[in-house]
Length: 451
Image 1 (cartoon, rainbow, N blue to C red):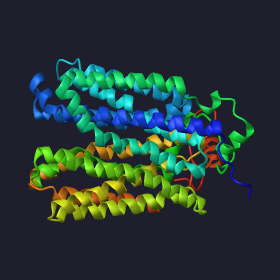
Image 2 (cartoon, helix red, strand yellow):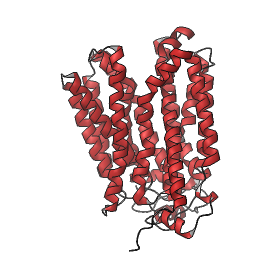
Image 3 (tube, one colour):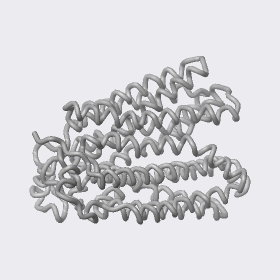
Image 4 (cartoon, rainbow, N blue to C red):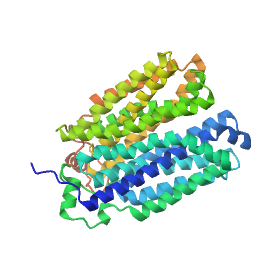
């Protein structure tokens, strides 16, 4: 076996700059999601909206974000991260600016739908960037770094947005964040390059691909995209990530309310108490990346190095969530919730790292976006289901237990449904069996062993 190559100084520079920009863009992404929640009371008062209206506005983003994942992943694989993230940043930032100019419910609803569509390319793009510029043994930590933006953005969103809102008003808060995203779009387009746009040396190309299966292609076709749904690995990733994001959004949407309603904490104290678990989420996201890379370097197969830690982390999240639900001490509850978020973000990193090895190179963003689609179906359902359970029972305990059970089921999907990577040879065999080639339409049937 040949000695693993190290990244050249030029490739390392590309990696650092790309990851830095992805983290900044990801933080803006998550802060922008929180603008409506932070400004909720003032918006309702200024626009004369009901609580039900605000519920529709909050859910509009989640549903459009979930369903936009499916075409977006294929577009990233087709057009490349440079174009797609520039367009996504531009669209969601424009939607934020519009959010500061709206005059009623209908306009706001449209702006929130646009925000979800615009934000859809962020994480599939990041997965493709890691696949394009990092060797398989280095992709775990890189994934953990870009994925940490989600918990970091959530942790800083409330204090940052509250400051902007109190100083300048909620409309200006929206427009300032929109302007920040537009600047970031310009920076990304100016600085990032796809590998095909750089004259790489033979050594640099070997580093990027050493350890990947042979016969990799760059661009995905519609036939290949459709075929991904025939593999059990794809469905295992979709169902596994459903539970990960379901639990994430229980805490994202309801943690302050849980601390105030169930734990009787003051609003002032809740703001700080709710930030602590998400800070641990940052640590968990990066830790997941370290674990993945360590396992690969010890000879564990790329897929197993991702799916096993993801499953274990989800089981741990479920256990700590149940513990938080039943413990009487507020301090222990915060500690258990912190452990839950540490582990759920560890799982999230492993899941995104899985997308970089579970399918051929030209399908990386596509399968990552399919996974994210499943996750955000869970994310869209979690706030509503939790609210209905709390309303009917008067307590958060059964809602948290339901979330834990969903996490256990999703862990089982990582353990028993995700089994091996989808290979280029299997994709080609299925395409040819359906009378198609790798350059045109989709298959009519799949070969044995798929599904």
